[in-house]
Length: 324
Image (cartoon, rainbow, N blue to C red; front, side):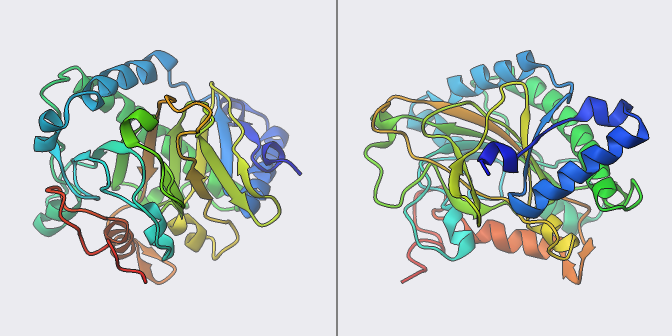
């Protein structure tokens, strides 16, 4: 079975408007895919390509600024701002020692206060917007509204795939946390020769419920791991979002579904100047949600802390060198 067979395409528009038999067929397809790879391709989502293109163009202008211009926005993983070179190593979440990921990110997160001062301070702080790209804020905020609505529709589909009521998950997303990363994967002229075992993003699973990824095709692109196929290139459809479930969703289903393990390959030697950019929306749930006996946000905080490599000033954080 190929990766395309393990990662099927699902038409969300057809799901929303289809008859009972078509909806049941889609639900079975989703259930089967999430038992193996933990990934889907989703079309019919209604998010126009022009918005995604505009975000990339604005973000690229920021990423191509000199380091001194970006440094005032530097933060550590889990905060809002610029994650510079060497800030993150996703393989640490699996307990695997590896060099830092070969990427930079603009990182945003939920920012509408709940009224609970302690919760708001940790999970709903204001976002930071670069002065050099003033158009980025309106573009991203529009995109984020679309992503939250889409993620709730996906959770309703997942509930149906489990044979549960439509609000089985969304009853826990009244005031959810989420994260959004614009990941820039520059070529070798920027990052240099990759070290052994170094990736644009190291092997890991995501931490939340669903991740909605808008990606670009490339030689140094997304790979997905399954027990049956090992590491394989993820199928690509420019019209589709790549959707995977995270650790909280896998736990919510008591392991019925697999948190999608994946990585992003380093810039390829045969195309050393390849530059890619991904828009990655991580959906979660309301703070304090009990997921099969685990506080969702205690888990999330632990995982975010685990992948941090460097403080914003470049000094090592607890993550660097933590494994023998």
